[in-house]
Amino acid sequence: MKVYVLNTGGTLGMIGEPLRPAQSAEELLRGINIPLDVELTLADFVSRQDSTNIQHIERVAMAGEIRKSYDDHDAFVVLHGTDSLAETCGALSMIFKLSLQKPVFVIGAQMSKSEIGSDVAMQIGNTLRVAKAFHNHGVVGVYSVCIGDVLDGSRVRKRAESDPNAFHTPGRHPVAHSWPHIRLEEGLQRKDRVLAVQGLRLDVNFERWVATFKVSADTPPWVLMDMVTKRRLKGVILEAKGAGNIPDKNWRDDESGEEYSWIDAIKAATEAGIHVGILSPFEDGRVILDRYELGKKAKDAGALSLESLTPDMADFKFRQAIAMYPNDPARIQEFISTNIVGELLPGIDEDVTMWFNPKPTARRRRSDNVE
Image (cartoon, rainbow, N blue to C red; front, side):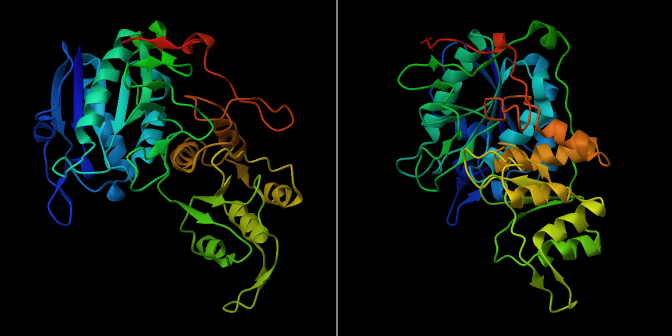
């Protein structure tokens, strides 16, 4: 089995005080126990940095590096900083979509390799064990390994800064476990021979000019209105309340003398061709704009539901939707509401929206202890 390891930086590859990216993939893997019959190809990304600085354009470049080595390797591991690891998981999931017919793991660590008590060796060692098991059992897709859990990359989120068990998947259980034995659970994608023979395809188009705002009754709506006036954005994500409620109280803009609400700002944005997506503030939340009056007002003003997407996935999927359908809000909503790689929470609400499950053959119906 051949595994391609791409080092992009992050805490696990840092040294010094304060910590800074320095170590190469070769240095990081030195002293790590590698499973038998696993051959590693070690590569360093062109820019190794604190993941806080990573942009989507660099995530596209990471996908390109994986594509270059795709045919010659069985699995891929991206060494990454934890602060934006979830964003990279979401972006890679949407860049590859179902054409990815091999496993990709994006992993990080809370401590550097040189620190006492470091989790680096465990993270890398467990990931290579899982990679071997996934390859043997035809498991494909983007995942992250966090200590003893294997998480679906389409819904992974960071929930802690100092706890090594820093990641989880809201609304979804781990899809596998890496300690003490590899155990596969339901929710894993399986290799599709038809898709596999077509090769890896990259969907790299996304809209850069998108911003996210957290909205409350105390957030002045000119935060958005000023962007509308200056024509600086193509898309806006608004983190709302409840099931997608947006406050409708008027504010007086002392600069212009006008009075308007967030609903008015949304209407001005959508009329100007700026797409507005409404995001739930809750980890298991679903945006149902028809449920409450304040959500319905936002919908009538032209806002779109970002369904049950996590913030990390919503950021890239919404950008991708806008790039695909820049002048068609209905097609954007259809794309957002379609479950492509498992990014939406399971279930169908006939009164709200319809999404599509992966093929039944892509999921296991029982737990497999494979080690």
